[in-house]
Amino acid sequence: MTESVSSPGIDPPSPTLSARLRELADYLAAPTAGRLTEEQRALSLGIARRLVVDLAARLDPEIDPAALWAEWLRGGLPCASRLAGICFARAEEHRWREQSAQRTSPPPLLSEPDASSIETPTIGETPSEVERAYLTLQIADRRRFDSLGNPSLAAPDIDEEVFRALLLDIAAWRLAEVSQDRARASKLGDAVRVATEQQTREMGITRAGVAFYNALGATLPDAAAGAIGRHDWPTLIALAAACHRRDYDDMALALLTAETAALPSLLAPLRLDHAALAPLEASLAMLPARAVGGADYGDARLAERGQ
Image (cartoon, rainbow, N blue to C red; front, side, top):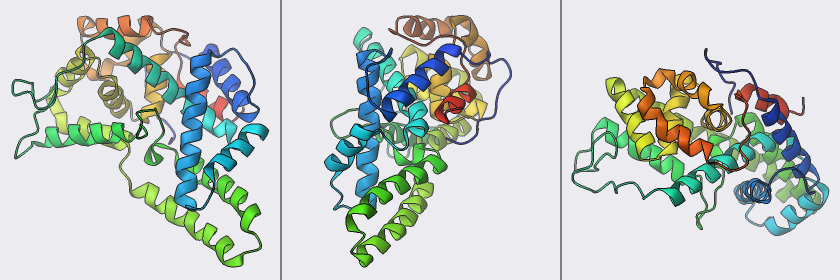
């Protein structure tokens, strides 16, 4: 997550969010029962585990991810405070999306011939710039799930500093196993460098959202309203993030923790009327155990750093 540019009209930080994030950081550092619901804990911990397994495979295919995770889980993740914010944001977004899917019919397929080019772009032989950008956004979102459909974190969606720190933590764990083998030990440093360089080249959902936002131009309000109407929250979050020049997970958590009254100002750059916001307000209001308080993710970053 890069440093966010605060936007006018966003309410002050939420003490509730700070408490949730600090609790999750403590849980990741030494897993015990806490005030988070079982669902929130399971989702956040699963997201952290899938990220660790993915990055371990990038560093060295011979790393035993089960042994690595089991040891870290017993003693606590060394990167707990850095992972708390992004894991919680991804888990809460997933809960929101799952709830919406259960309460609404699925959105129309992209191949439907009568679908709007803005709401659900039809992919034809010569797709427009908007269609290509929308497809890229969908692909970036799909990378945020594992092969079984479980929520995960894609490498390009993680702050470069956090990404490198986690790689180094994993490399240090592996080095303790292969320290007697100088050749394999030296390869770990090269693997960290290669993985870091690869991350900067990959297209994440934040960048994909910016490309889609830029392609829309004057049709932005229609696209945002269409996303709300379909409960297509990833598209809405990505467009809002692009407007505010924030990262996707920053924006997701800001929306998820905002008071209902704060939503119009939070989404003002999308130029939506109040009627278009109604499905969003209703959906958020029905999300169980939601941390509400007009949160700004700057507060989350402090909690993530243990401040």
